[in-house]
Image (cartoon, rainbow, N blue to C red):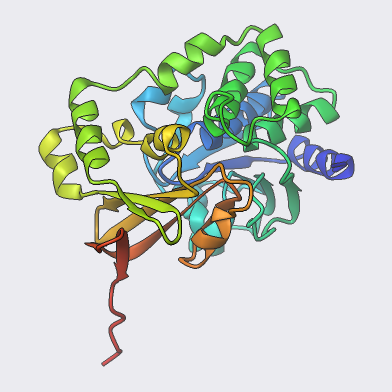
Length: 330
């Protein structure tokens, strides 16, 4: 997929910016953070003033990546400084990025650059660096740097490798392609190490977290008619276990590696009456992005998700989400 002109347009906008605001999506994972941190490193190397923001705090497990400590959660950054370029990473729309209500408050309307790889992306940017054939947004940023003959620093290589390993399931799912392997190989030549990144992504679960995983595995259900497997994780269980949220992430990817089903749905209760759903599949004829879209979510064909207000309910053949009722105005 040739998007060379778009790469150059994005490069020109960023390198000529007065100040850049870099945004990763809420509940940040290795891909959105890896891509965003690499861009932050790029801005620092070029002397471009830049701020980094995420609606949620960066989980401690990603502290090994340079620049994660520069991310703030205070929305005042949108009004405190004048940013003429806004870069959003790994978000299908501005609502998912958590900034749809913040952009109108900015002192000036910034030029929005949208870096993503999801087929459900709404192309909300003034410049859309979107490649649905890429394994990850980190691979999109890697290509952006390469197309513009930019050197990938050691710290950026670690960040980008983290993103690629996150979305390919450490080269075990359908996102693993010759281009993702080629990008990873180049990043290894720049000093990044797969074993070090994998240690932070996978070998980071305390005993209490694995016990909680066992509870979730024990309630797996399978609907033979649809081929869908599903399970649920309740907020009360997380609170009673004392396990941090970051340690329950990755369950859907883990199950997707071993279950012999057409598709998988993992439901998790979030604070404030919200439910997060994570779809996964390795079946060639299943598009879970379409399933997530029905709940206002998105993603790509083999991995997608949604977040809605509601409650998890148990059925005979699976777990479902009962949407919260809409209250009529008085």
